[in-house]
Image (cartoon, rainbow, N blue to C red; front, side):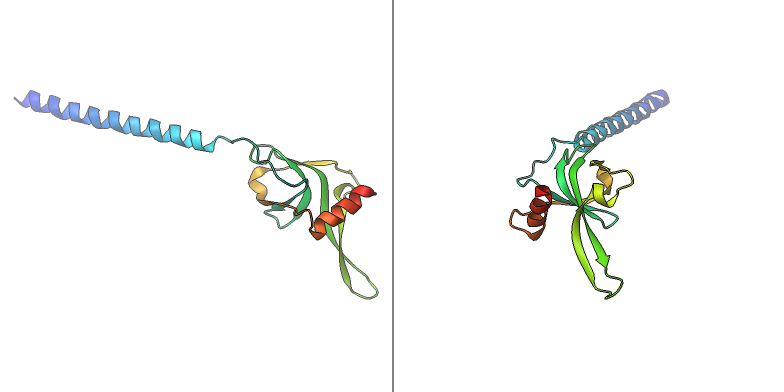
Length: 137
């Protein structure tokens, strides 16, 4: 009779471990399924504002957003300049290869974990107007 109870207890423990194993397998499947990148996001405007976690905003044509390797081309950045005589500041939109003239980058491969957000640049916005003026040069 004692042996029968031990066998029943052992069987119950085996059932509990089997159920725990099934729960772990299902949880792992759900995690993997939800962390796979989906298709890249398509934007309705030619240019996007890419806001980075370091506070810098880049403007350009973003491809592959939502994938492990987003690419920003035709990259512009807003630069603040101060007149040393008057101490007045002004902001201008400059192509990144002009700002970083030492190595003249023509594209940026972005780390997706460093992207804080992406916004389409409205076609009638001041930035869109500046971008179209820059493209004309």
